[in-house]
Figure 1 (tube, rainbow, N blue to C red):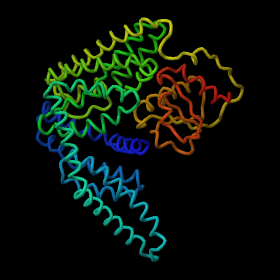
Figure 2: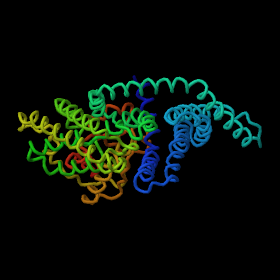
Figure 3: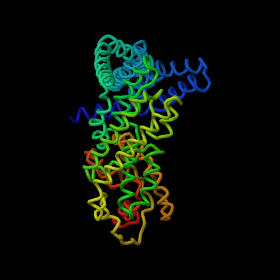
Figure 4: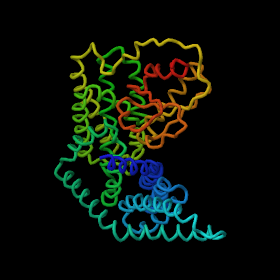
Length: 443
């Protein structure tokens, strides 16, 4: 399980690094198809999707596994597989690039002491070139048939579900995986390559909507605002961040603290998916993050009505069911407010320097949002000399003085000896009292 988890995180991270390129390709498709109707923009989109993105994925994978030299080997390996179909080329570029980068690093470490003086550059360049081409050739000969079969099998399965009208029920898998922080892997690692394959035959894909739909999360947050009056103020910012900012992790703690809400999220997601399916709605490219804004940008105008109706329907269904679940628990808000009741003694001496890292799965969504909010909090508290960063869980640097993450995500941080502060809700600044007390010298 640990190995599988590391592989999934590696692949998700490679994909996440390339998301801006996917969004650009999608925007070019939108512009070329509806706004400008320009064939040159369409050609640019194809070049990005079929050539630039796979090669860049190979470079990023090689860099992660073998540094700068590994990135070069990964680029060569990816270049050897771009002649395949675009979906499998992207997956295989990440695999072959990572293998080439790893072998490059290991090989150079072994031979660098045996290279005659003055021949270092020659040997290194020849080694990188041959290794990259061998890795790409091995991927082309050995891995491509397997990858094409797997993508075909999964694609046929999803096509069967769509034809039989059962694709909405994939929410029974998607929603539980989302709340345990597998949302990025589901969207980027699974739906993205299959959605790109579907684009070739249908022109748009419903798969880009199945995980990114902000309706279920919006419904859960709205239900908390309606049921618990004392939570309405923080809920306003959470609703905006979740629906317009596309940071879905905001509502995960609410579901994890009352697992009954998962049934409401699943029901809302199924309702929204049915609306997407019945209106034949889809996106022209991946929407990242899952914001209403990015979703509409990545959709053809003829699909706007169906998409908006699906999002609203999923929000309404989730909200109504969540209100029923929470109504019998009015006196006990789902998020633990123990930290809000702690006054915390103000220490006499403050830390002059500290490096704080906010951590999440990919290091781009919830951690980026939380670090920005905490910087504002530091300015209000008058704390200077504290540097705040956001980073993925597998890239926590050794110079970190403290790390911060959501409480339910902390279990993924194994083997970390740096002080770790957890919060229930990343948008609720009252949850950072313990961290602020520590920064102010409170131990």
